[in-house]
Every structure is written in C-alpha cells, then in structure tokens.
Image (cartoon, helix red, strand yellow):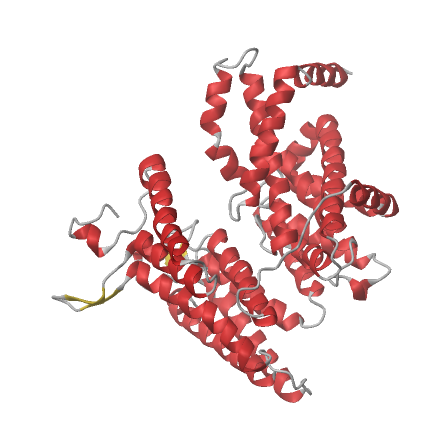
Amino acid sequence: MEVFGDLAGGFATALHPINMAMLFVAVVLGLVIGVLPGLGGTSGVAILLPITVFIAHGSLPGSDTTTAIIFLAGIYWGALFGGVITSILFNIPGEPWAVVLLFDGFPLAKRLGKPGLALASSFVSSFLGALVSTILFTFFALPIALKALEFGPAELFAVFVLSFATLIGLGAEAPMKSLAMLALGLLLAAVGFDTITGEQRLNFGQVSLLSGISFVPVTIGLFGIGEILASAEEQGIGYVENISAKLGLTDVFQALHELRKRLRLVLSNAVIGFFFGVLPGHGATAASFLGYGLARQYSSNKENFGRARSPGSWGHSRRRTPPAWPRSFR
Amino acid sequence: MRPYQVATAAVIVLIAAVAMFDSRAAFSPSAGTAPGDVGARWYPFWAAGIMGVASVVVAYRALTTPQGDEGAFEGSRSLFAVLKLAVPMLTYAVLIAGIKWRTTDFTYTVLPSFGFYLSTALYMGLFAWWLGRYKIWWVGAIAVIFPIVIFAIFEIGFRVSLPKSFLYDSGILPF
C-alpha cells in the first residue's frame, strides 16, 4: 500500500501550480520540436536541457529540481505527440516507431479527408496506452524490470525476427518487395563502424561514411522527398498538399466513440507496448509493428487496412506511447 | 509498370552485388560453426544476399504476370514536373560540396564548392522566382535573409559549422 502513498505524494507535487504551468510550457515546446522532422523526444530533451538547469536552480518562484524533471517529461511527451502530427499530415515519420502510423494515418487524413479524426484517434489511443502503461509501471515496474534483465541478445533477436516477419506479412500484396526493402534498411544501418567488433563496413574508403547513415536523412530522403516528388507528379509542379487539420470537438468525440468500439484492441496493445518498452534496446519500434500486425490480424475488415480507415492509427498509437514510459525512465 | 519494376529490381540487385562484394572478405562458408567465425561483415553480406534474391523474384514476377498499362508517370507532363523538382535538388546537393578530382599529386577542382549558405541562397532564390513566381525583390529578400538567419543561428548561436564556400577559403565571405 506504500505505492498508493507515493502516488498521492506524486500527484500532490505534480498539481502544484508552478509544476502544472511548467508542464504546460514543456508540452507546447515539445510539440514544436516534435513537429520538426527528425527531432524527437530524446533530441528535444537534449536541446532544452539548459532551460531545466535554469528551472532547477529555483530561478522561477517555487521551482525546484522536481519542476525540472516534470519539465523534461513534458518535453519528451510533447515531442512524441508532435511526431504523430508529421506522420499523419505530411507522411514523414519523426521517429522509427511512428513509421507504422503512415500506413493508415496519412491515408485517413488525405484520401478520406479526415485529418482531425486521424489526429484525435492517435492522441486518444496514445493517452489510453500511456495511462495503462503508467498504471502497470507504478505497480509492477520492479518485478518486470528484473525479468527484463534476463532478456539477452538471443531473445531480442527473436523479437526482431518476429516483428520483421510481421512487417513482411503486412505488405500482403508484395511480400518480396517488403523483404527486399527490409534488407535494404538493414544494409543502410550496417554502414560505418560495427558496434561490436569496431570493423569498418560498407564505407568504401569514405571517411564521412564511417559514422554511418542515421535515421533522419533516410526518412527525410525516402519519405519526405519521395512525398514531394509524388505530389508533384500527381498534381503538377508547385502544388502544395493542403490538408487542413482543424481539430474540432466533433473529431475528439468521434475518436472516443471509435475508441470504445476498439477498447480491447487498444488495451491489449497497450500491455504489449508496455512489455516491449521495458525491454532494453529499441523495443518501441518492434512493438509498434507487432501492434499494427495484431490490429490487422483481428480486424474484421483486413482488406481495408492501410486504405484509409482508422483502425490502423488505433493500432499504432497505443503501442507507440506505452514504450515511451519505461524508456523515459530507464 | 513492367519496365519500371524490372529496372528498380535491377538497381537493387546492383546495390546488393556491391554490398556483397564489399563484405566478401570476412565471409567464410563455415561462418557460425566456430567461435569467432562470424565477422562483422557476415550480416551485411547475407542482408544484401536476401535483398538481391528478393529483387530477382520481384523482377521475375513482373515479367511473368500481366501488368497494367499505366506507367509510373502519367504522360510527359508529370515526368517533367518531377524532373523540375528533382534536378535542382540534386544540383543543390552537388553545389554544396562541389566536384573535385583527386590524383596522387594534384586535386583538380571541376566545380568549386559553394557551401551550404550560398547554395541555399541560390536554391531558394531559384524556386521563389521560377516556381513561386514571386516579385523580384521578394526573391532577393528570401535568398539573402534566410541564409543569413541560418548562419546567425547555427554558426554564431550554436557554433555548428556547416560546409563553407570557396569564397570563405579566399577570405571574401564569412561563409
């Protein structure tokens, strides 16, 4: 029951006016950072770290180190939500685990013209996922973390094989194309120094390739520029895709209604996301693909998946956020 | 779609071949059977192998199954629309670094490097004038102010050094 006492204490601290105010500022800043392609939670926290030093020194009335921690958490979560916005509206994933959101989120926003619903669905399911993982985290963090330490390279490899298999299964139309692109992604990741042996791989004598090819240039190049060229091809030059995304209350209510219909899916994926998030390594990405696969597998309308219906965005978000919790506290 | 599918598959097979060739050194047929046998290049070798085989299958299926008539581009208009964006983009990337040809005792400069700031000014100016059809003073303002703001933020504020132009080397410009 000690947990409840701690929890009440935590709420009392968090609800302090200065903490709430800084949380609000942090979430807005985080959203701004998250919307910029390539900058996600981790880089957002790094960029805004100097401000937290300022806060932690008590430069604001009533602020202390706890306020700084709350501020950091706010930036991290805000940036995660910001990444969702670019995925849904621009088809550019901000983080590796937001890639799955492109499959359904963008089509829902563009083809069905419901960007508000896509965003609201994603936010609402992320919120629920976060809530579930926070509850699990509060009560079972220690036993699960101890169990997670037993997760070795072999188990992690198995998890990734499983999620890659899911990914290939998702591209049901042309599994071979998915397989080829998956291998291309692995190859791009292999460029530079091997992290285990320190050997140089695939750098062809170029010093600039030694540090490898990071995720951001690849996503901007493949998704961002690809999207620009594709819209130029479809609409003619100079055309700017104008998805007006006014998030109205109707969208939120519709999203909540959809959430009620898919509560079991969201909850089960939240739990999956939590377990993956506790695991060391990049659990979130694997979890996001597995969650999407699960959503697709249990959908009554598999054919329409990836063709602008909202279940996909449901599937993805709940898994995206839960891993964030354990990650941010690891 | 057939020629496009086959051409894409061929390019991917070529990439796979280059990657497999680069990784051949550490590959041994007994890899994995003895301790320390699996080198750093074992994994890229097989990833490239899988990619190559999958692309061959894709090409084979594109050739043997009936394909729709439509191409990747809807007529020459859309092809030109894509080229109008893609060519300046590639030129921009080339301008930043310039083209140099190194021999053992001399480096020939085919195209001097314009660096990030000058290239950005040219690129943004071109698009504002050509595609945006802005008034000429707006074009000038965009081309001049934007790179200067980036310079102020990155070089002066964050002290992040971005590629400089040949005019920086000769001391004429600060970027």
